[in-house]
Amino acid sequence: MRVLLTTDTVGGVWSYTRELATGLVRRGVQVTLVSFGHVPEPRQLSWTEGLRHLDFRPTGFKLEWMRDSAEDIAVSSQYLLDILRETRSDVLHCNQFCYGALDVGIPKIVVAHSDVVSWWLAIHGVEPPHSGWSSWYRDTVWRGLQGATMVLAPSRWMLSQIETHYGPQPRSDVIYNGRSPQWFNPRGDKDNLVLTVGRLWDAAKQVAIITHHDCGWPVIIAGETQHPDPAYRTEAEPIICQGSLELKGRQTEQQLQVLFARAAIYAATSRYEPFGLALVEAALSRCAIVANDLPSFRELWGETACYFHTNDALSLRDAIAELARDPVARRQYAELAYQRARRRFTADRMVEEYLLLYESLTEKRTLAA
Image (cartoon, one colour):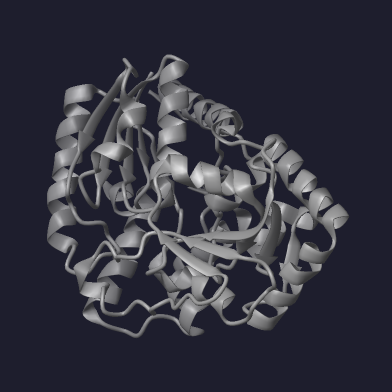
């Protein structure tokens, strides 16, 4: 089987793609991987070495949510069509909406990792104001969804958002994201330390909420500080760290693994989170999770996380302080999260579900021919 897989190098989609592409190749699938957004840095590419059936093609074409991206989308769409003709792929798996509209004779999967409308609503309480760009974006997303053979989302909550803003998706399903447990250390000695990881420029991650009150333990904040689109870089809220707060900024994968292994508590502060791979990484490192009370977090983590009142900084402080005072409860929550991640959010489980979907879609196409 040959799969053309699109990705971006900006956020969690890259980690998701790494797990999926690696797992597919190791199961004998020939994967052509095309990346958008920014050409990946060398540190992002070490995982591709030695994967014989991976054909990686990086590009710098803009992503659909970036400003003034229409021209890039048109050119990159033709670029994908050329690659499809060259590779004779059996499945087109798109991690952007726009390419679902491509006129091709093979199954097209569109994965809705997030979208601007639901993001904006979570941040501002209203939908984005009408403009030429927002109309273009909505139409681009709608056409991509309509053209897809199958629409997927990483959570039922995210799929519900897509249906709310773009209409019913009769050909849809949910496949939870996954990570490889072997990359994380669940057996290390824990420090009395709180960790939170997120794009600091993204208001959806709401990282600054943890700086509002002293929770009694040292807090490390790690994440990319610079917006990938220069047009938005003046809009990010500055994060001021004082006292026991430490701002690490962007970390390598190895540095993050060390931080997860050290931290006894992980704070999931996002106010908008369709899935949240960082929580899986924390859980696989046996961190106790304190999470914002969001429908998506409740769906994914159930009673294995300790929740604070939605977007409430004081409640976040109290939840952390309560776990900090109670080592027994802290270890119990850490174990519960670890076991849930091992059952539901592994890369192997995710890859197998995608492979079954690819096989199902290609079989149906063969029977219909």
